[in-house]
Image (tube, rainbow, N blue to C red; front, top):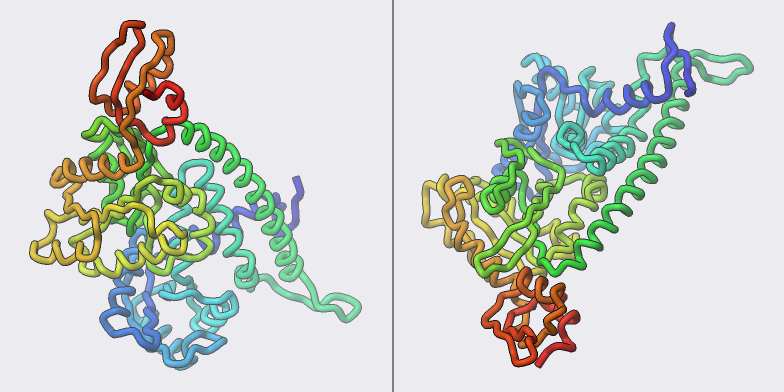
Length: 443
C-alpha cells in the first residue's frame, strides 16, 4: 500500500482518500444558516417553500438550523452567483446567530464555493452536498453504497483545492512554484481518479449480477409493481401495509434508499411483486439520478406504477409535478399508473381530495397507517396487472404436472375437469407471458 508524508505522519492511500471524501460530505456542521435563492419568475411563496424543504433536508443531514433568509437573484454572477455585497450581508447575519456553515439552496460551482468560503470565512455547502451526505448515511446494500461512493467522489474531485488551503505553499528551486500543498493536491486527485475508476468497475460488476437475477425473475410470469413518489410520501408504510414487510419507516426525507421487493397476492388471486424505490425530491442532483439509475430501473421495468402522494402536504401539487418530471425524464410517464393520495386521515379539508385526482384515470385515497383505501387499491392493481391476461381453454396431458402447477399458481381458473383420456381440461385467465408454454394444448 502506498503512503505519503503529511506533516509528521505517514498516511495510507485508503485512509487519506476516506478523509478527502468525508471532510466535505459527511461531517455535519454544528449550526447552519440557510440561504434560499429566488430566481427570476419565482414568487416569494415558492422561494419560501423551497427553503422549507432545504430545512427538512438539513435537519435530516444532522445540522441544527439557526437562521434563514431568501436572497433575490436578478443577474447571476460567475464569482459568487449572488453579488459580493449580498454575500457579505449573509455572512454577518449568520455569524450573529452563531452559525458555522452556510447552506445554499442551489448548485454552486467549485469556484463559487471556494469564493464564498474565502469571503465569508465560513464553511459553505450547497443543496447537492447536503443530499449526498444524507444518501451516504442511508445506503446499506452493496450496490447502493457503491453508487453513493461514486457520486461523492465525482462531486469531490473538482472541489479538492478548498480542502488543502491550510497547507503552506512554498517556492521551490529552479523558479518553480510548488510545495506541500501542491504535492498534496496532485496526490489527492490521483487517488480520487483511481477510486472513481474502481467504483465504476465494481458497480458494473454488481449491476451485471443484478441484471442476471432480474432476467431470471422476468422468466416467471409475475407482474411487477413499483412504488414511486416524493420522499416521505409514505411509500415504505404502504409497502409494509400491503405485504407485511418490515421496511424502516421514519418521518424523515430519504429514510430508506435501498429498493425493497416483496411478493403479494391480489384479490383476484393474481400474484405480483411490489418494489419500494428511492424517493424523489425537487432539484435532485443529476449525479444522483445517474448514480441511482439501477434503483430506478425497477420502475422502468415495472408493469404498473403506483405514484404515492402525501395528500396532507401543503405543497402536494408541486411534489406531484416534481415526481412526474423525473418519470418523464426516465421515459416511463406513460406506464399504467395509479395515483395514490396517501395520508388522507391527516387532511383537514376533505373537499380538496377529489381535486387532487382531477385528470387522472386511476386514483385511490388511502391512509397506509390506518388501512383506509387499501382494499380498493389492491382491487385496482389486480385489474391493471390483468390487462394483458387472456382467457383460454386447455387440455393438458396427465403427465404434465409442471404445466398444471403453473396454471394453478399463476392463472385465474374459472372451471376445471378431466376428459375421457384423463387429460386435465381447464378454462383459465392466463398471463400473456405464460401463454407460449400452453399454446399447443389450446382447444
